[in-house]
Structures are given as C-alpha cells and as structure tokens.
Image (cartoon, rainbow, N blue to C red; front, side, top):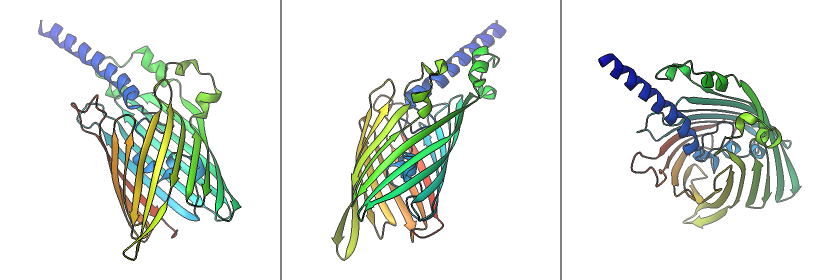
Length: 311
C-alpha cells in the first residue's frame, strides 16, 4: 500500500511540476530572444540597447552591461534571467554590439546570442537617425535532470530536438534635439518564417516603441535632468502593454532615480549610482501583478555598467 501511495505521489508531483513549468512562461511572458512581458528594467533608461538594436554604439567608446533578475522568489520554478551586452561606438557613425540573454523558468531554459550592427546618421546639427540590425541564434530546451518523475517523455525529446534557431531584431531611433522616438520589430523569425512548432506560442513581444523628452532644469546651481518616457509594446495573442514613467538624474547623471507604471497594473521603481560616468550600479524592483500579489512578491534586478572610455 505504501508503495502504491509513493508511486501515486511521484506521479502527481510530476504532473503538477510539468504543468507549472509549462504555465509559468506563458504567465510571465519569458521569451529569451526578445524583450518580455516583464522585461529587464534597465532597458528603459540605463541600457536601451536591450530594447532596440539601433541604440548600439550610440556614443564613442566601449560600454559593458550585465544584469540579473529574480522574479516571484516564493514560487517554485520562478523565473531567473541574466543579460550581458557589450557595445562599441567607433565615433564615425558606426556602432557594433553583442547581446547575450539567458533565462530559466521552471523546467524551461532559453539562451540567445545576437550580434548587432548600427549606423547613426547626422541628419542635421541637432537631428540624428539611428538604424540597427541584430542577428543571432537562440535555443530553448527542457532541463530533463530537473524533471520529477519519468524524464523520458517523448514530447520532451521532441521539444529539445528543435535545436538552435536563427532569429533577429531590427530597429530605428530618431533624435530631434532632446526628443527621441524609437521603434523596433522583435523576433524576425516569427514574422518571416512559418513554423508549425510555434503556432501555439503566446506572450512573446512583436514590437517595441517609445517617445521620450529630456528637460535640463537648473536648481540651486545644479543641473537636474528630467526625462519622461512613454513606451508601447506589442505582445502576441494578448493585450499590448503601455509603460509610462520618468527618469530623474543628478550630479552629471551619476545619480538617477526612475519609475514606471505598466498597463499590466504593475509598477517599476529603481535607482542608479555611478562614478565619473565610468561605472554604475543599478537596483530595480517591479511589483507583482494584482492576480498573483497574494502569493508572491515582485521581481528584483541588479545591474552593473562599465564604460571603458568616458562618454
């Protein structure tokens, strides 16, 4: 009898664990190759290259950014993400970059690597047009070692047999004095290639757009930067997301505080502390959506930025 009970419990755990692992990506919108329903918070102000390839190498010199995010830490299989971007601006209108992203949600892990080429046109004295293209590969798999129960399910093997997939993003940004308008198409593979294996995929972003304007205010002999921003993101098979907020910077941009409200009824709050525009540490907290706030806390993110050449 005990043997039967143990087998029943193991089977139930396997079913629940697999269902949770498959449901969490849809709930969170985690899609490694692109921005997510709950994207890295640094993409709005501190590292805009994450959201738009046109922002790579916008300024001369080298910039490196790393970030780590933990969501829903009280739930088993909660999403964890890591990102790395490196970019170089040649100073002659050309910028290049590399974008590496890894995320694990439940049993599902996805990693992507993309290389970026960007060109920045000086249209007029105070106007600049930026264009960028990212191409690379991503792989999504189920971690069989983490499966509780029989890990020889043929559906798992079929999922993992899809291997590496080529993908990319394309973007543009226009600067007119202190006004900036951005637009990017995310996941070119989903747009250009008909893949029956992805027909049931939902909650992956299809585009990113934003408008921002920077005000420089003189207060007590110090310049304070105020940058309101509105972003609009397209998501497949669900409502698009509107983000609205602002970034306030002090001490030559070495101290920043920012916040955004999302139409998903979540909010993002963060800060960034830097030294001589060469190194900066960012901390971000994003609240949970109302549907799950009684079960778990929000998401925490920490980032490090290094500029090898003063901007």
